[in-house]
Image (cartoon, one colour):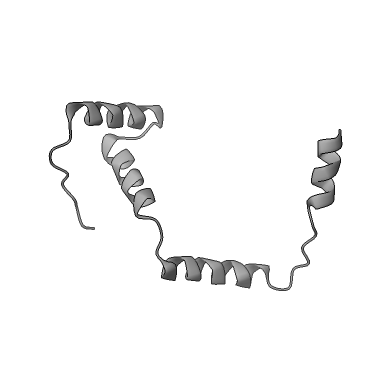
Length: 76
C-alpha cells in the first residue's frame, strides 16, 4: 500500500488532529487516513458499482412505503 508524507503542518493543526484521533479512539495515522479517504470521496465508477450491487440485492423484493408510519409517528 502506498504511503504519503505531509510536510509543513502547523503545530496547531497537528494538535487538533491528535485531539480528534483521541476523541475517536484512533491513532493519529488512522485518523489522518480516514480524513483523507473521506475527502477524496468515491469516483463515479465506484458509485456505479455500489449502486449495481444494491440493485441486485434488492431485485425482486417488494418494498413498502414508510411515509404512513412516519406520519403516524409524527402525529403522536
